[in-house]
Amino acid sequence: MNRTDRLMAYLVMFQSRGLLRAQDFAAHFEISERTVYRDIDALLQVGVPIYGMAGEGYRLLEGYYLPPVTFTPKEARTLALALSMVMGFSVPGNTRKSAETARDKIQTILPKRLKQEVAALQTVLDFYAFPQPELDFDDMQFVAFQQAIHDKKLLTLTYHSLAGNKTTQRTVEPLNLVMIDRAWLLSAYCRLRKDVRHFNLGRIDQYQVLEEAFEPRKVTPSRFPAERFDIAVRFDHSVVRWVRERQHFTFIEEQDASEAGIVMTYRVANWSVIATWLLGWGDNMEIITPHALRENVAETARRMITKHAD
Image (tube, rainbow, N blue to C red; front, side, top):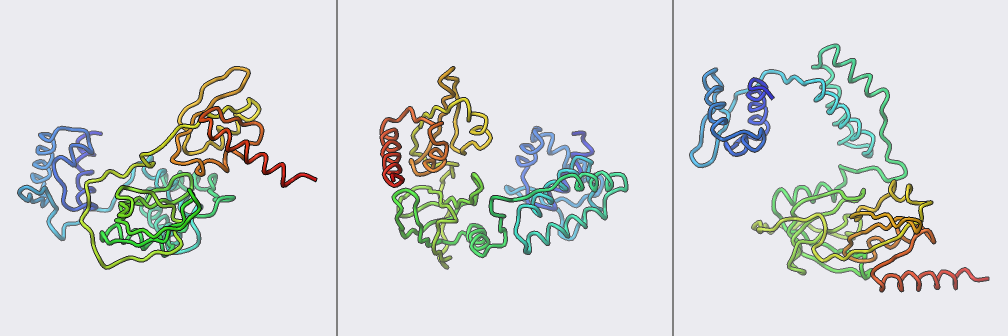
């Protein structure tokens, strides 16, 4: 990125984020803090009203507005793709409507040639959620959790755990929302378990946002729970292509077992996370380790035979 583009990007960051430190610019643009200071000085020289706050950072003078935003061809295509995905994957509601109006507004400020490129792109791309359920970004629970995270308010949950198939009552300090394998998870510090836990929104039977606020803890939300174990599974060559196409999100690695098939390793918190997916491959799948899970699958197969016996 040349310096002119970088200076314009400074203004966009100021207007969208407000208070920023030299370290923030240095990390974002991968430059030294000394370069940041020179860039800030250059903006001041051309009359941009930036003022520094000792020990806090820099901010634009309130009331200062940027000229109309312009997009590069790559940025315009990226925005068009993102908005098309939101409209294709979300249920009808405020979010989809907002995506449509945002798309129309962006179209009005694009140069004619770029507008034609974006329009051509949208005519050849479609996004569908079928057979998976569409995303509901306006769901009351989803919105309430976002607000609770922002306001640092405690949540009480009635949670139906897949492991053990039982319901527990939890008081949690919400940290963030993350989508994994087409399911929304709430990452939160659980006061019952005294650690960070991940709650599938579809398994929360009831919830309440409390008035009580909490002080953020020094915790790092992880993608998966810390206590995990590996499962080695051998797949027949006849289904390997389809396994890779529908790969489970806990997949770690694969190894060629020659004529015997391909051995794939999965790292899970409990067997129930992957059980249904693995059993769906029938006799084209064999669990190698751990041995306890081999016995579990064998017992499941025996029960199935009994149920289906004439």
